[in-house]
Length: 425
View 1 (spheres, rainbow, N blue to C red):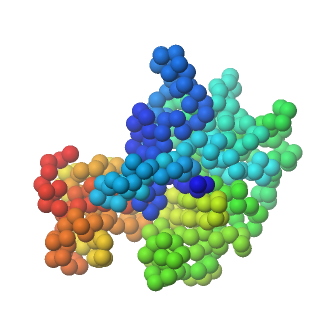
View 2 (cartoon, rainbow, N blue to C red):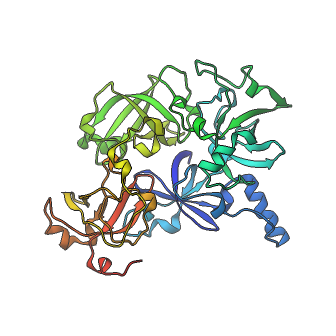
View 3 (cartoon, one colour):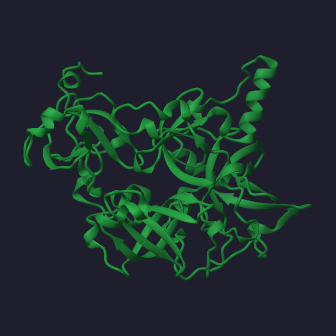
């Protein structure tokens, strides 16, 4: 299997990371699949039978953090189990090791538009050496480029050995964006034998700038695409419900975007802003790559605001809402639409929509997802078939959140009385 995916960390334990993937899937990154350096440190601990002073996963990562991964294999042990939300049955075994994720990236085509995750291999006086996972390439991350990242994106935690950090090449791209590792540039000036050294940055302004998106006019090969990359594309075709299963595996329709005239990227309806009918052939869109199948050359993208550069997400009046205030009892949602497999609910007030702040088990109104995405929570019909049968559009119902998908920004709720009557968890 050679599929790369972009996920968000949903839960962190001492031995693994639980990753939320797009379209309701979940995965697990085991502690030995973080990086080669971290695995080596674990082996030293086991060999010496001493814990030493090595970092733990809970101090290296944070909930909601994005992480590109390689799908190593499906988790057979979890495939037959389900939490009732449709998430657990799709659990996969993932690897976040840069040597797995970036092994196909061509060294001679690297440029500053590519977002890579590297592993900290050593700590030097003036910075860090970074294992990018690209054969023949070593990165150097100066201390001056890490200060803002540590303060704003890493909760003040210092970078540690074996940990992962998002990086871009430092000032390596000419004005036309078509740089290569062979270009004569200050960032590319050093080499040791057959190993090339590149200077890197993790400064938030340089990582998150919309200028780093791949434009339609700059050449880009398929191997240069990585999970989390931003592409400026155009709508090639809108697939309606009747034809969507054959195209994307989803019964809700999708959009086919064209990038650089030859590459096509599927965007599921659930990852579009607004209605599918609002898109027309030729429309310019900005999307984020969330899945790359290297064997079939298949791309899947997302247009949801939380995956895009902050500078291109239009602010709304919702920004003044209190996103931290989640309580035991709040206003209840109205039923919006009923399908064969689920109910779609919409809230009276969108105050509680930041899914990263949600604790499973709280009795809250449905759409704790971001309201600017037009997303709604879903409740499986089998959890309350009798209740669902008696509901009509506009009815007020109470739900309890039983699971959520940070990557899709969708909450899953239950109408089952036995679940609603449970005390606050």
